[in-house]
Structures are given as C-alpha cells and as structure tokens.
Image 1: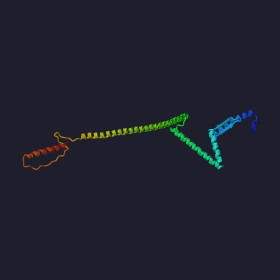
Image 2 (image 1 turned 135 degrees about the vertical axis):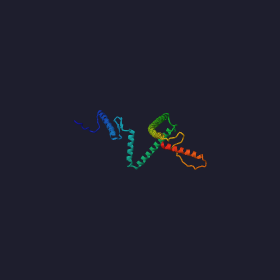
Image 3 (image 1 turned 180 degrees about the vertical axis):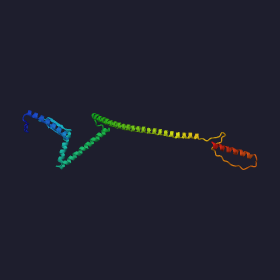
Image 4 (image 1 turned 120 degrees about the horizontal axis):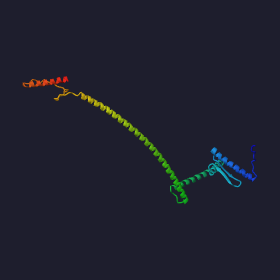
Length: 247
C-alpha cells in the first residue's frame, strides 16, 4: 500500500508534532545541502522550533547569506522608490569609507606606526601576523632561489656538454693536422732521398762536373814560354770534358 496523503495542518498531539518536526527538519537541511552541492547555489536555512530552539544551515556562512539577501532585497526596492536608492548608495559609500580607513590603519600598524593605542593582545596578534607574513615571504624567496639554482645548473650542464663537444672537435682537428704533417714531411723526406741519389759527381781535385766551362782563346803573346803553358791548360780542360761525357 502507498503512503496516504497527510493533511497540511497543525498537528494537535505534541508528541507527534515533535516527531514530525524532527523528521521534516532533518530532511529539509539534507535537501538544502544537496541543492547547494548539485547546483552550486548559495543556500541558507534558518529554523526556529516551537520551543524557540534555533536550527540553521548555510552553504558558505550565515552572515554572508543574510548580507546577500539584505542587499538583494534593497536593490529590488530601489526601482520602486528613488529616495531609497539614494539612501542605499549613501550607505554603500559610508561602508566603503570605513573599509578604506580600516585598511589604512592596518597598513600603518604593519609598518610599525601608530601602535600607542593598541593593547597587549592587539600587539601579540600583530606580531603573529607579521611572523606569518615574514614566513610566507621567506618561503616564496626560497622557492624562487631554488628555481633559479635549478635553471643555472641546467645551463651549466649544457655549457659543459658544449665544451666537451668542442674539445672533441679540437682533438679531431689536431689529429688531422698531425696526419697532414706526416704526409707532407714524408713526401719531402722522399724527395730529399731521391735528390741525394742523383747528386752531381765531383773529382777529387775539387772541380764540379756540372759547373759550366767557358772556353776562350787568348791572343798570341810575344813571349815564347807562355804558349806551351796555355796549350797544357787547354788539353787539361778538354780531358775534363771528355771525362764528364763518359760519366
């Protein structure tokens, strides 16, 4: 059998009324939570029991939900009443001025100024806030330095690899130069050896056979003893030529 319909009216029995309130309240809060999760909605539920007990649920915070509701309600009323619109914007300007003043005061206190009116608890809270800020700054600094060190190490490894490759190229070029030198000096030594085999023959008395000989007939002189001497020299030169031709 299906559930019968329940008349929507006040339950007279206090016990049944309390049981129904507990069940329906739990179901309502569960549905509100599911609605906020499934639909990404900002939900706030406030329940007061007949005994003035408070039960509430807020997807973010009850203050945020109520503030948003009040603002939306005022904006709806602005279109109906121009005077209300002026008052609304005046309140908004006053709120922004108060927030600006508060932020400026906090900034001066963080800079170590205007601390005379602060109590011990306020000073301790300010000290804790500064220590947390300093810790965050140091962590960020260490992170940046670590990244820079990693980048420099990577660059150093790349430079080292490039230097190694350059040294290898230099060694190859040096080996090629040595081989070329060996080839060049080897050919030169062979030429020198071949040249030593074809050296000109010389006679023991110091005359070079390849030296050109100039023959010149001298005019007859008046002295009689000079002619036989010239004839002897001429015969000696002719004999040298004959030896050269034979060799």
